[in-house]
Image (cartoon, rainbow, N blue to C red):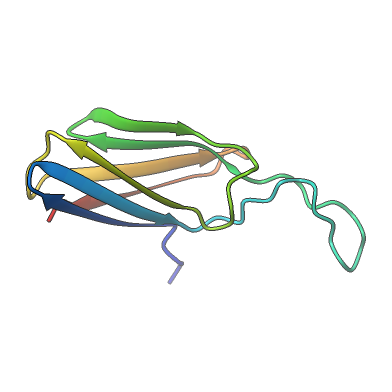
Amino acid sequence: MAKKKIRIRAKMKGDVTEIKALMSHPMETGLRKNKKTGEKIPAHFIQDVTCEHKGTQVLVAHWGVAISKNPYLAFKFTGAAKGDTIKVSWIDNKGESASAEAKIG
C-alpha cells in the first residue's frame, strides 16, 4: 500500500475549527548535491496548498524552496460545524498533486 501523502486532523473548539495537516514530500531546493555523483538534485517542492470547506477556500498558501521536507501545516478558521468535511490539496513544481479529506470532529 502506498504511503498517504497528506494526513489531516480537524477538530472543533467552541466555534473555531483547528486544522492540522502533515504532507509527505521531499521538498528539494535544487541546491543540494548527490553525494555519490556530485550532481545537483533537481528542485522538487510544493508550490500551492489549498484548504476547502463546503467548496469555499479557507486557506491558500504559495510555497517555495524554503519549506522543509514533509511539511506540517496548522491553522484555524470559523464557520464550520462538526461532521463537515475539510479538503487539503497541494500541487508541486513538477505537476504532481495530492489531496485528502477529513471530517471535522
